[in-house]
Length: 165
Image (cartoon, rainbow, N blue to C red; front, side, top):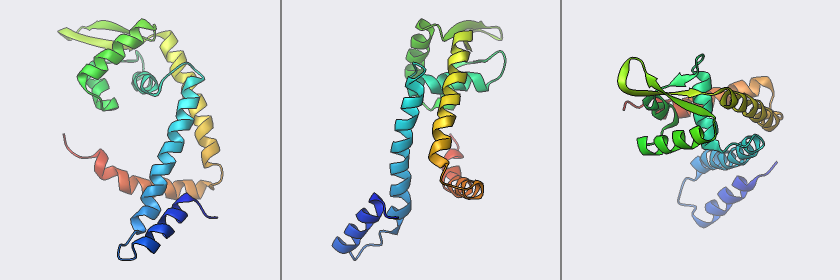
């Protein structure tokens, strides 16, 4: 079965036979798949009235376990955005009633961000929708193939995810 990357690679091999374009066979597919996944995720989230960034913040809080709260700094670490961006996101989610700010009992100047019951429901519903979308995407692969693919992708992503600082 041929795909768009096969055509792209063939064109580059024809036009630039002096270059080894083999990395494109893997990484262009990963890039294209990421775009398809982004579309599927946006659809799954929009069905529950969420934007992808809202899902990221809400599910970070949900994964924290009861009482579903984190400091803004912990949210920064999990979502990889700047503090200004996180402040804006927390403000917007609080206005929607999906999170609330609470004083941090261990730091008089600190604040904790807590998931509301509505935020928890939205996080849970949108996660279920996302998983249904992603199961459909992976349906052509056997369980062993999915495991092999996950292991291979882990080898590529782990060095990026474990860079200090």
